[in-house]
Length: 211
Image (cartoon, rainbow, N blue to C red; front, side, top):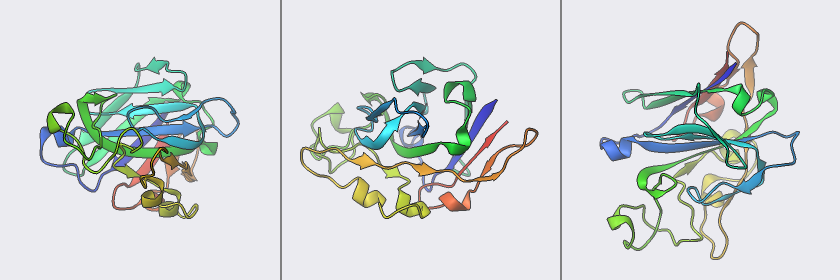
């Protein structure tokens, strides 16, 4: 059994390096109390509750990873349609668990950099690292490298906005809150469909399915 994700970006760029955008999906199982709240040095942010697994998506690598660092690649597939600006990914449920209807997710994106931190291009106000290839405005180690995040306010699940969540604060990295993916239909013979309109904003249209 597999979980299918499709993410439509507002802009993917015209340069090879920009086209290789970077997205991570963090999966939260509400029945589990284990996991990690740190999203890793690439995003450099926390979550409001422990996550159990993560799906790493970039132009040169894709894998599932547990909170304790174990990685899986077998059976994971991805494709990119540059015309429609759509990234599609399928992940075997054995890597993230089978109760996906009850899960929550943190969906983030940034700029890919093979010489960056875990594949993430850093956000830094001073042009002093990585030969100047970086996002601007940040103040490491407290700023996040996240460019976009589907915040609860975007999907009507709370008041936290992307701007508020990623707002810089000295000596404190951002804390993100996961969102739900409501199911449209579910059967053993057809895909589980998530409502794309529910997750439409300037950055993403998000759908998914289980086969």
